[in-house]
Image (cartoon, rainbow, N blue to C red; front, side):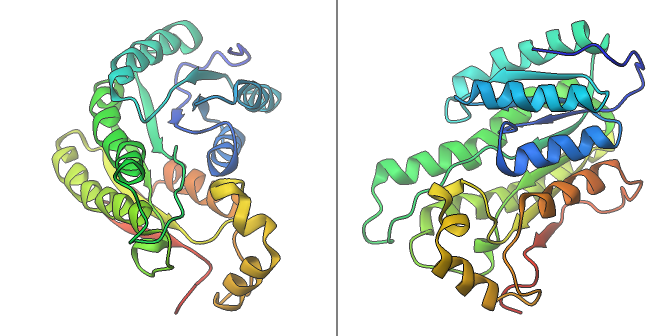
Length: 260
């Protein structure tokens, strides 16, 4: 799936994992609006991914959607090969500029009830994937590129039931610092963004669909509401396309000011 509307080989290109819905979709569309070509990965929602590609096409940019299960590290080498092919055939390029490690899913279980299988799933999806997928993709990134790892506000504050998820995301934040240090010789910056509660289908759509939970989170937030996908999508696009490349190795929370 690709479009062929732009021929500018200098167009920056972003790769967003989990780009078929939610925060990843919003980021993809806002990047396209700023003149960025986009590769999105999707797990099982092919139709949704095709819809994102079509929307990016309508904005005048090229886009490609590739299937990826981030819980399966053995698939990462093949994904890198597919990215290399997509860059050559769609953009006549050998490198891309921005990587957003966004794909993920949640587990809601109390600490005492969390199973080893649930814990391993969170580590594989949120931490191991960021580590080893980025390993495979960095050789395809241009010098001076930018990486954004999506973390969570739950690494700063806690709600019962999210221990395994938040623990994996805490690892992502530590990894972000090491990546920033070790990729600095190529002038690639690495930062983590930490959303608060967002109205998406994440976690079964609890924040979006549970009015009591939504209201409780809004009451704890300085700006008086929970977040929307575009609150994060615009942040991702701004951080990647701005010239403010001096921010590096940082955790940036985007929660509207919860628990201040």
